[in-house]
Image (cartoon, one colour):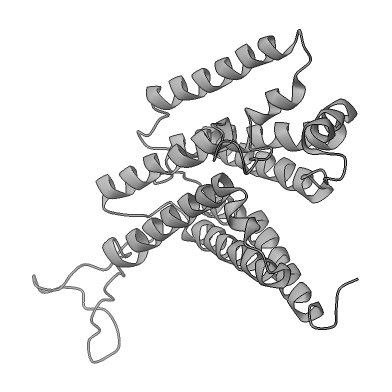
Length: 287
């Protein structure tokens, strides 16, 4: 039973956890809404969406498999001990399904809305094909011995033993590291973030910061920092996401801020003159 002194800390880190959960969940909507309003996906990098879909699909496979499969749960207990808790809850599965669905909707918008001359790069297509080919090969390797826990570890971290490797290479790790790069490069080449929703990034950043705050408060409450160094791979992976969020915010607000249209000068009667001087910029047309 928690002491009275630890109850405020427990409420605090649970609050941070829920803020992170809702921030990450809602973060998919600003881009979908922006695409819908503009009826255009120009400015949104298609590689970013395709790689993101692969990332969240792998996360869904991991969560759903470990949550619903009794065989995989049994293998987990055998490896890590029957006193351990399954590191996947119902809300993790729900988040994964929601993420895949919203990313798929974004991909559908790419198909139906104006996309200019943008297209999915061959590098991105090749990367996704290689990722799922590796997953298929791993499935064939796991099939004879039914090593399903090892198989789903390909899709995400299961657990990193303190006396073993620091981190495991997985599809989740690989896709998280590379998925942001195409959008960063595209913003740099266009010198603009127009068409790429900053709301998505702000919510993702809020989720990352509050997630770290939750881990920190939890560590203080438990008088142990195992949350950070016990799974250093997950910690570093989250830092990658926060780093790219900061890059996007720098691009949007500092490097390539959106230029505001200059309103036309009015004459004494309060109307726009019929003949404009050559030094005055033309009023922007409504697009």
